Image (cartoon, rainbow, N blue to C red; front, side, top):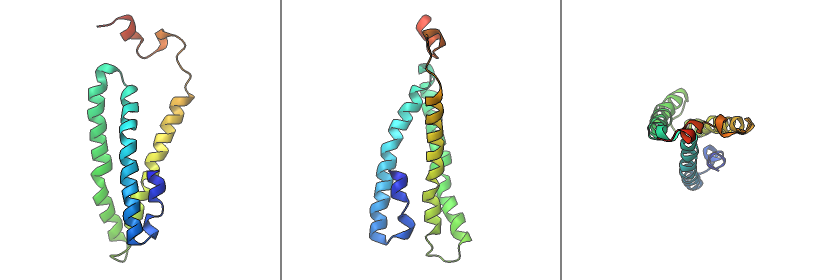
Length: 130
């Protein structure tokens, strides 16, 4: 829903822009905890704290940190100061994130489930608890 809310943003007036940005932030905030939970459930239990730390580091380094620089770079390439192209490029970049997430989901779903506990990634923990 966040990506769908972002699609018309470069083409609307300011009041509608404010409402759509609110939807982008709301739905973006709604998707982050479930995706983080799915990611943490796919990691072995003893590595979850490190996985959570690395995930948050990646969110900040590759998501939040480059956004102002990217906006400034695209803004300097456009001819006018009031252009909406930089905001459109910034908001449409989420399409890449969504495509990678869908690729990961389809890859995970296309693998057959383990047929026995010995093939499970947690089989070592089940057979030899600490």
